[in-house]
Image 1 (tube, rainbow, N blue to C red):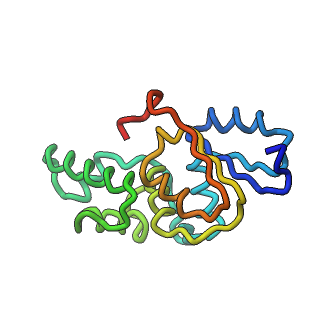
Image 2 (image 1 turned 120 degrees about the horizontal axis):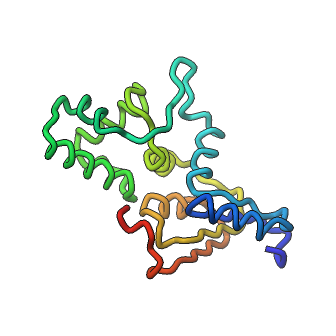
Length: 178
């Protein structure tokens, strides 16, 4: 970063701990902006003023089992588990197509009618699906790539940058459950 002071650099960290560490490492580099992928997504949403409605601001929280019971109108554990798996697979994927009508309806209940909260992974998916081309940075660095979902990677790949630098170690994959 010090060798390229005229380049604007975005350093995306997977989590807050990495972000704090990188902020300290790049403290002398005014050309480097450090943030987590989630903070980047929220910043993008706020910048576009996309999710704020005067009548109902969006709430960030995890989707609860009670939300799914209410949505599906069932307390059948197998149906609930199946739906949650489908929804989570979609949210973490790079796909822009809803896998089925239930997932699409639930998505609309989250983002249009505001019936259910917006989870962190869900607003990442929202950004991936609605991202406009960004030319703010010459270089984008993403750390801990092995822990990123396909959705996160898709967001980074949609950004215009002369250089993208991906760093990761497959053998340190901590978030494999995603």
